[in-house]
Image (cartoon, rainbow, N blue to C red; front, side, top):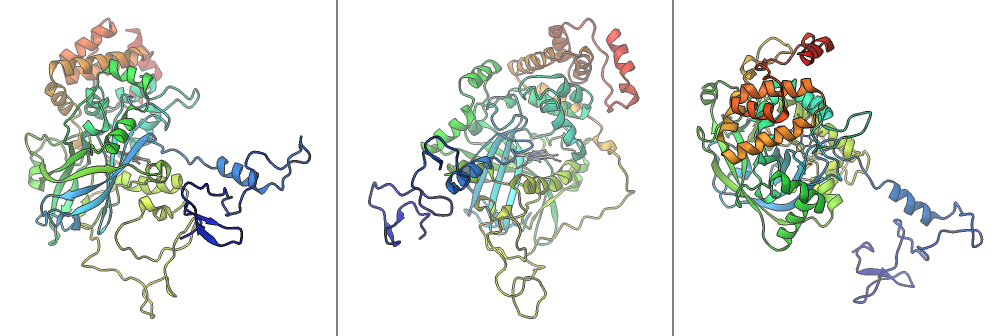
Length: 534
Ligand code: HEM
């Protein structure tokens, strides 16, 4: 026991004793020094000046000055909960991952839901994608499925990520606007990025204003691999299906809720879990091989595409239950560090260029945000299985290798050694080809799945998509951007394009957009102006 234990107190003679029930412990500095007066700084006379010698004042103010860490560069606003994952049945045929070997096995989990574009203090009901990040503390290390509530993404290549995020975040000169209001930069970027059209259909749909976190789906988005003990690979897509079903609010409700209770989603999760209504999701997987992948016109490495569930029904493999709120929002929800590269043996990556970029980005951003390479020493990020490595020292190190040798091999028989059997082995895919910057031809169709999604919606849901596009584009001040967006809608669905064009009061219908990203020349200011003048 330490004095940090709130129930212990040091007595007059310095001895530790149990505090009497209801007794108030003595306030101390962070160094443990008892404090005599926490109301007044140390002054010369009654009216100052204040003495620099006041170490309690200095410590208290200094610590307060350092309370904030950088908010996440994206997904800044989030809310997390603890729970567990329960495996339904062995998937040993497909993967050697320990978490999928035994039916009924429970694995501790932490989940953080988030919005993407707004800052930490923004509102819960913004029209936005929701993050659905799951950390599974498996017996072979942490496995993070860092997903969203929408199964596809805006861009195909990670190199475009800073651009789309800059376009959606506040402008560098004015520092506004915030995420939920449409603005020229975002729609400018989208209208110049045809690959985003499928995602835009989802983001303009009711999916982007969920009723609560408990009524949301989650998706791993990318194609991953499962690799079995014989080193055979099967492609896999991960889906979280809410037991409560899928529910959204309508835009009118979202606007009112944001005004009345900007914490609506986090309050809902807190209240539900505290009341014992534990939300639950089923993990479902779409498993397929190379031959099946090759049967599509689109590329399974393209994160703007999904594999239709009618063609490949997802199979339930386990369930996720959230049953405990964090005790400490900062220590757990704020400091949790998700990383797509956290995979156990038996789960592996595909060549999706968005995923490949993410695998680099998350470690980098966690070191910056949490301030040290030792962010795995923070309990929420530490593995819950045995772990042994030779990393040492650094800012805020809580532990170091034990013993004489912090290297291997060594002659002292100390420390861990690698294991070809138990360790992670990358799937030995054969890769070849010229080194080049190129978008594959198989990534070129940007409209078919956008159309499929739009047509899969019921008439009221389609009307909501048209209303959302009208609302957003009506706020765009630059006419050429509105027209360019409508020219993409022509490729998605004529009826949708006509409706939005009429609502926006366009004089004439723009011709269908070119599916290729415009070249620099297309975007010469003069070219844009000539469209304007028409
Ligand atoms: C954060 C999902 C694409 C960089 C997050 C979070 C989620 C997420 C859920 C929040 C994690 C949390 O709750 O703490 C996704 C999905 C993507 C995607 C599903 C596409 C399929 C990208 C790309 C990049 C990126 C392409 C960069 C190349 C980041 C960064 C953070 C983040 C830097 C902040 C992490 C932190 O500070 O904790 N992403 N993301 N993401 N993402 Fe992504």
